[in-house]
Image (cartoon, rainbow, N blue to C red):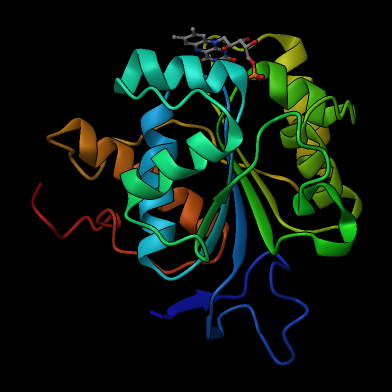
Length: 230
Ligand SMILES: Cc1cc2nc3c(=O)[nH]c(=O)nc-3n(C[C@H](O)[C@H](O)[C@H](O)COP(=O)(O)O)c2cc1C
């Protein structure tokens, strides 16, 4: 299995002895990736590809609205029974069962629903304002929300990639509340300073920012350097 360099940051790997802020370690993580019904399903798909390519083990969760947006924006129809979706996902990402699993939203018996088998980190990408609000108030009505609740109660890394514009006071308050609890808020706001020429490059920018929040090394976009001609 490919191992990646992981930088200890923001307390993410504080359980790793001797991991200083700039220390780089070779580790793989068990990560929950949740795709909700915000626009930007392609960010979630690209992130899934990159996490699998860098050796991590994924549990994928998709909200009901997330399936709708996947269909509308990416032309992907994955909706179905849990075992059918699992098979479609593994085929799509060319992933083995040991590396990629999927649980339906109503499967509250899934391992990720319990603090005793909490993942190393969770990312909600993209994150709708609805899911963000429910996570912020601990309303664990489905597996996705329960998994995020577990990450918060177990003080494990949680990264949210919200997508909405404009933002209401409710949205901003919910993000502030979660940020104060240690959640990393990484909005789907692609920068333009790396002079992207394609949508893929803009998606890679956001996915790169998510990987940075997880402490995972990447080369998905060119860092700002005023010496480099764009
Ligand atoms: C094509 C499409 C795009 C959407 N984009 C957004 C969005 O960018 N942000 C958002 O908060 N909601 C968006 N929504 C609305 C959410 O899907 C809706 O609020 C849903 O109830 C969220 O449910 P979930 O959080 O369980 O996924 C969009 C809906 C559709 C159909």
